[in-house]
Amino acid sequence: MKNNHPEYGSVVFRDASADFQMLTRSTLSADNDGGPGRPAKTVEWTDGNTYPVVDVEISSASHPFYTGTARVVDTAGRVEKFNRRYGRTA
Image (cartoon, rainbow, N blue to C red; front, side, top):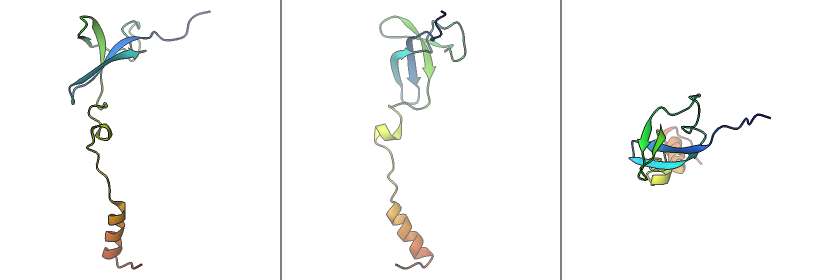
């Protein structure tokens, strides 16, 4: 019976906005035969090996939740402002 599982190998995920790279394992590895999703770019890692690289827009290094730059919305204050503006009383 043919093995239907995709190849699983090392790949680098890179967040250029935060200058952050992470080497991990994924089915988007260089062992794929040029199938859909195969990274065309490669990068040389600190161990001297070359790995395929996937550019991502947001990672844990740039996401507002993980970096602590997330804004907390004051919903109670917004409701009070709405009630004052449109004359609704308690």
